Length: 575
Image (cartoon, rainbow, N blue to C red; front, side, top):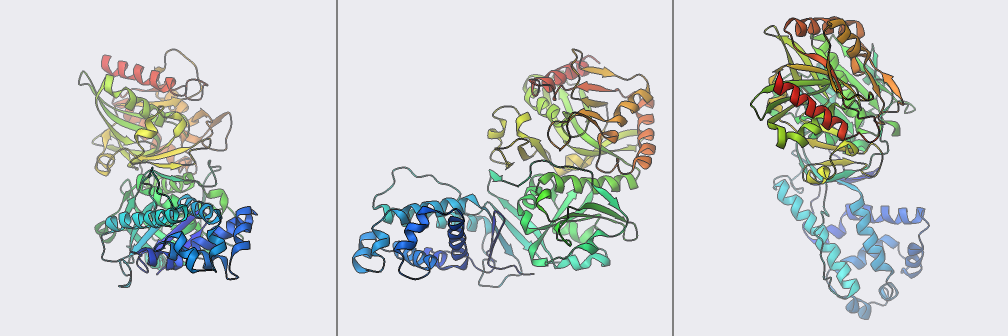
């Protein structure tokens, strides 16, 4: 379905370049999109009881203020301010004050403060920008907006700037959409009305400001299709087809949460058109679905009849946090793994080669804030001194399965969703050219960044060392191993950690197997798989132990994981 030329909601703006693509200053200033932005800014000034707006209102010519300003802007792209003043008494008052210059500068800042997205629909009409190179068009549009602002500002100031800042004035991300039918069960084929994302163009660093910064509660498994509750306007949704591990996942997200949908591109491989035609759907998620009275609903359903996992996260302010999208996707994937007798792992896994050529595949298990991702960050920091090579298999969620009488680990994500506070000072700036930042000014600020490739995470690596991440115990020897299998299982299943502010929890908390995303909801089935996996690990003499990351101990947020990594490297080198 075709969305309008321009829409604006929450803090985002969406331009449909298939309907209208501006290539001149006149086209830009005459467009419906510009008019909507201008009116939206005026409304914001009214809400804030702006003195600037009062001054402008007192000077206008009796017509609508937005009409007066847009007319003046078109004149100012062609004529100097004095020429307009001398030939038009109507605009004389406007142009003898600095109010319009201040208004213009604030309008430009307002536009750049929006999260700005552009779309091209491959079935668009010929008046739109269908056959133009999207990357080139992105650069051209940004230059057009910038040059238009500079021309108007320059004519109002009557002097040239001496310093120019080449800011990204166009859109932050662009989407190429298609409306071909996805490989969905017949029961869900109505979702084919939603346009599917074929390509994404990001202009990093992308900085977004969702209204929430933590996640709370468990996702609930229900036993009837939750999508029956949802009323969908198909032109308000977009479909991101994600390759989550080897599961083909269709994420249908509402435009209110465009920033979260775009952020998926830094976390999960975008499925190709060939994937969509050749593979069946494994998972369907509707994120931001509107249900009656808009209560918070984070539920999922195992539709055995159609062999598909279905999730719903309802449209409300409480779920405006990327963790709800990411973790629901992974909960659905983990449920599928349990159905396939594979063990979902909430943790991290790396393939490392030390300087002395010793290799090891290390898996670290723990719930949010336990220190698994931070341990990987420590590995990265220390790699120059200790490692020849490091490959990231998974950063947050993976799975174990028995193959060739050995336990192998597989990943789900090609990217990482990490806390800024737990990264090396300055690393986030080094990664700005690839990063998506979420609420960098708040506690639990997050960074989304690619760390691996799809071939690596799905290849399968034999588990050489398995460790549980303990983030709250202070001890000198940060690496211990369990001789008794049951002692190990007891620690892993208890899943203790000290909450780090990544969720609404506080203090020392527990979660079944450190994984509230599938295993906690299906403990009986998971225990059977877990026992089989641990039997195989001990049968093959694989070291199973505990690593003390000290991440939750004040002052040890970075040194704790680094010390643990150094001792682990030493142990691998000597064993």
